[in-house]
Structure formats: structure tokens, C-alpha cells
Length: 246
Picture (cartoon, rainbow, N blue to C red):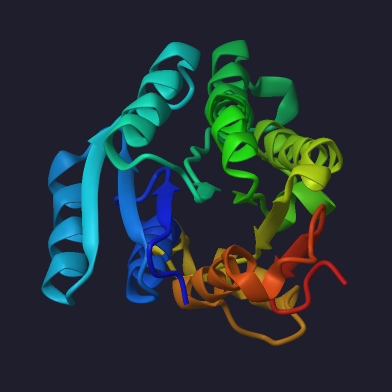
């Protein structure tokens, strides 16, 4: 259980991030529901947590902005005194073939998915060292493990998240801080709902378990890595993908 823990979940207004926020709160954590665009969606997550007896607050921040990410972390530290759990989930896609991909689309995805994770990690590291403990869980992707045609930017960003995770884990292990990554496969979210039936069928054909996962599958993995039971696990990439990357 995560009673008395303060958790920051980036990109938590919908999809996987939303479920992670709900799950951590259900374990007793006080959750900072970070969002960039949709205040209404973030407040809905906060309301759902509070109705279930949990504690949460929505805080707007574009984590791709280094200074803004620092302001987010400073706010949480000044308000709650600590950050025990950081889940770097914020991410975007700008899919396209490599030969046609614009520099703008490449940069936008790297800035949010990879640099955003770096920004938050750097701004929280000193506090976790001061606390002599913490859990950082970065959301990567099966695309970062295997690569995916039409997603050079997304695959690069998520592979970068894995490298960032491993490097940070080595740097902070002696301070009682664990850093791990969860790599989702195809998960039932708004993002996958818009896929055509033919694309979904092709995706399922690549999955040994022959089905898409649910957001709860990812959230439960994150909750485990955030718990005391995972105290001796660091620098790992947990693929929650129905067997795609094995």
C-alpha cells in the first residue's frame, strides 16, 4: 500500500495516465494529476479519486518546458513536503514515414516523450536524494523496444526513455531511489479506438495473447514498481504487451 506517499503522474487526464492516477490513489497515495491541455478531464479524475475517498489535485504543466517542469516539482515539494513517486507518462504521437516526417513533428515527440521525462526527473532528483528514497517509473512502449514502421520519432523517444531509465537507475541506486520503465503494447484507449478494423486485426496478429491489453494492466504494473515490495528492482523494463516483444 502507498499511504502517506505523494505521487506525481504526468499526462494523467486520460488513457493510461488516468488509470495510473486512479490506481495509485486507490492504494492510498496522494496524487498530483498533471495535465497540459484539458483541465476538465483532469478535474474529472480528481473528482473520481475524491469520491472514492482518496486525495488528489490537478496541476497544469507542459513538461516539455524545462522551466515549467521545475515549477511543477517545486510546487509539489513546497505544498506537500516531498515527492515519493514520479510517473513520467506524458506523451504524444505524430506518426508518419521517415522520408516524409517533418522536423517539427520529430522534435515535438522527442521534446514531450523523452525530454519531458528528463525534465521532471532532474527537478525531482535532489528532493528524492534528500529524502533518501523514491520511485521513478517511466512509461516507454513496445515501439521503443522493437521499433515500429511509421513511428520513427515515437520509437526513438521511447527507446530513449529506456536508456534514460537505465542510466538514472545506476546513478541513483545507492541513494535508495529506484528507476524503472513499463513498456505497454497495444492497450485499449482512445488512441487505439480510432484505428481501423484492418489495423486492429494486423496488430492482434502480432500479439501472442491475441488481444489488446487494458489500462488497468499498465496501472497495476506501475503500482507494483511504486511499492515497497519492489524495493530491490531497478533499471528494468517491464513489457506489458501480451508477449509482443519476447
